[in-house]
Length: 116
Length: 114
Image 1 (cartoon, rainbow over the protein chains, first blue to last red):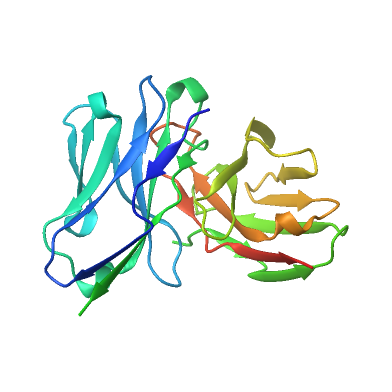
Image 2 (tube, rainbow over the protein chains, first blue to last red):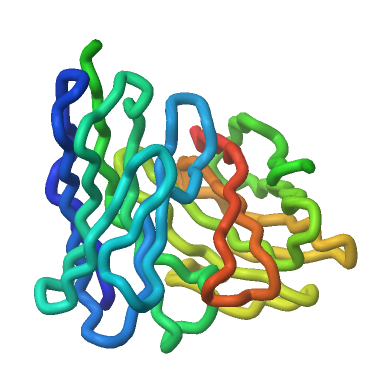
């Protein structure tokens, strides 16, 4: 079965530190990749997505992610985090071979705590 | 521009009972998907509704059923509740089932089964 692994359960950083959250997926075919973010008390929001083309994708709030097909990875990065980035981050994947985007497979999430 | 709304926000039920959760999609969206998020886990796909029919289903038993109405709103029903059904239930809407249509999530319904 397809799966998504997020390597870190909880990451604690100081403001201005750089961030990289790992994400690996298990499916060998063509995939669509997503990062969602859930700020405290809020709903899941799309941070960025990759469908095809340039493997380096930029999202909202200065986040970016790089798709490395050979490593089945889609790591999330931000050069300098802010206290307001404190949230839980979820990596997700789907594939056209599974049907619509509605059938997303999520990782378990990484909780990011940024100390002011 | 209303986002995805879910009701109720919290619910406590007893094992063996039945529950109905409701979802109104974002304005203009016609596809509704339901996810279950257990504590410490990522959301897990239950099923998707489009044009009032279940189009895709995840690995959930038949105790989980749903419905979509002509106005695109949706209900999730769970029968014969088990303790393990305690979770946050998320509704997500999108446009036209397209693989590239972003999902918009609601705040969820927290279900506790005692």
